[in-house]
Length: 148
Image 1 (cartoon, rainbow, N blue to C red):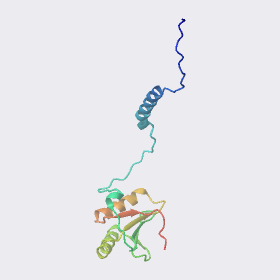
Image 2 (image 1 turned 30 degrees about the vertical axis):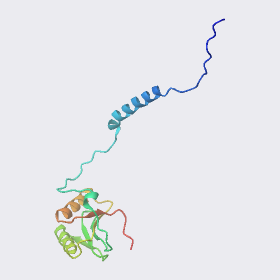
Image 3 (image 1 turned 90 degrees about the vertical axis):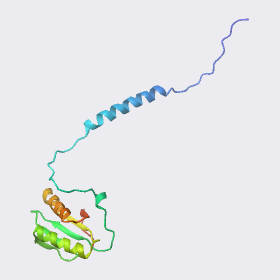
Image 4 (image 1 turned 180 degrees about the vertical axis):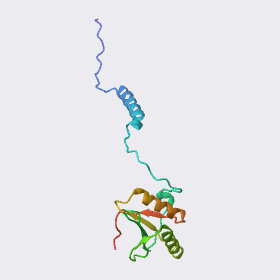
């Protein structure tokens, strides 16, 4: 009797172990190089004495209209309370006094700061910082005019 090798059934399977190894190496390379690829613009941000994130500030959920502080193109200040006409040309001390008085009457009122698109960023930050130092707990930034 002659020797007959056993016939093996051929199976077409992909060996994925080398692919997993290559994928892990590529992942490590991308993780290491990602911090070096970030692009940005160097800016000189104005300093503040106290700054909080929006989550730390919380929010006032009531039906009262917000107190709106406006910062003009040249840093001039305006104030609107209860959807009344904007009082313009206020000094910072006068603005802070009026905002504090309104918040004593209505402590749950929110304060929104709206800045002219051409105003220097520093004017808006100085206003936000002054409001925060004056004890205003919740300050938001306006991005669009309020609907009447």
